[in-house]
Length: 183
Length: 126
Image (cartoon, rainbow over all chains, first blue to last red; front, side, top):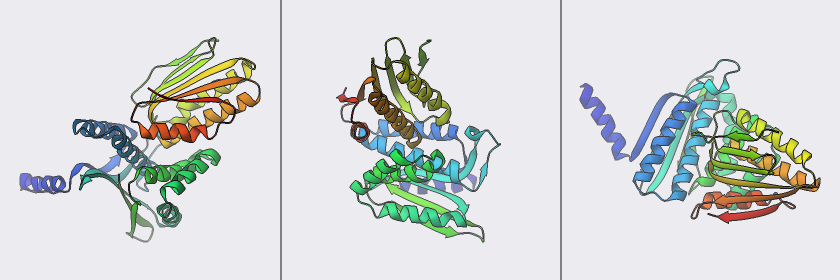
């Protein structure tokens, strides 16, 4: 049972074109290690440089969003770099395109403003996304809000089609937030 | 003043700031775990140096392969410091180097150059 269960799980992942899928607490160190594996895999497959950079960038921004914004997070005061947060992050390829999916639990009251930001970005064309990026990087004086704005815009900028997102309320306080991006 | 040299690490770029030669270069990848801790001291030294060398010329080279959004913000701050320095009388040349075929870094160079009116900006394919 042990082998057959896990073999089935692995086969399903392989069939979905998954390069890796991580579920659990993620640290900056894990982000680095997964990113390293991702770069090596794409390099072995002779992925072109621009595609590699776009996929890597989306992966880093999504992983950092989990670390910073997941409601399931553990950190000691003053040790921000040691923060670990729970979420899922999956990278794969489907019909010749890479995709990155991330998901994490968040507070329901924080979901609404996030949804508004995502919807705004989704409705911009590439020129609009670029202009929005430049506006935020130039004028945003508050570095704390950057992850919530510039990161999402960067993700959309590297995507080959509008980003997909979804929310699932899981109890009175929390919602599960998920985003899928094709590069 | 002592020069500032930080070797490239796995996720932070080499910083080579030679005060007497008025040269600063950044090379490598930038997605440090703690962007404020990495870029904060550099931004301070850059501001102070620009003040100190009014009338002279500063040569800056960015040769970066990747940076995340927090680092992009820090780079934008550096660029704004350079532009302000020129307004205050320092001459500044900024070489933005990108690898052939690296459209992402080339486009970032173009984006950042839009912030510059007075800095002598060079977009260089290497």
